[in-house]
Length: 67
Image (cartoon, rainbow, N blue to C red; front, top):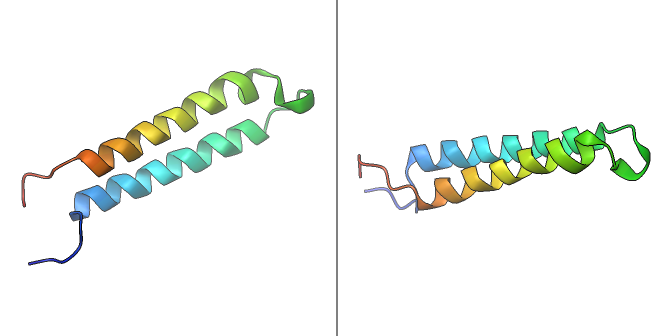
């Protein structure tokens, strides 16, 4: 019996969520408008970051069927 609190699938989803979060923050830094007020800094980047948090929440709440 494994003593880890999550299954392998949960950890894979958490890593994927961290990658999505990182990509979202990088996209926000690519905005060339002053103070990040362009499309990348105001719209696209935050949407990617929000989706990364959704993936993280799903990874924590997901209960794999192989347990």
